[in-house]
Image (tube, rainbow, N blue to C red; front, side):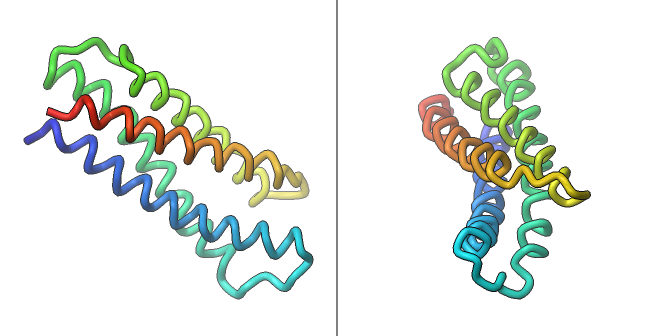
Length: 135
C-alpha cells in the first residue's frame, strides 16, 4: 500500500500545478494582448504555485526513498527517475524566476513561462513513464 503513496502524491501535486499554470496562462494572455488583467488572477497564481512546487519537490524526494526502501531498486535508475529529475530542476528554476518576478524590477516573464511549461511537460512525461513501475 505504501508504494502507492508517491504516485498519489504526485498526481495531486501535478494537478495543483495545472491550476497554477492555468492562472499563469491567463496572466500571460492579458499581458501579451495588453488587456486588463482579470481580478485576483495574480494572487491565485501565487497562492497555488508556491505550495504546488513545494509539494512536487517533496514528492520528488519521496520517489527515490520509496524505490530504495520499499522496492529495493537503485534510485533514479529508470527513465521515470531521469525525467523526474529534469522536471524537478525545471520546477526549481521556474520557482526561482517567479520569485524574482514577485520581488522586484527584474522581468523574466518569458523565461518563467517557458520553464514552467517545460516543467509541466516533463512532469507529465515522468508520470506516464511511472505507470509501468506501479506495483
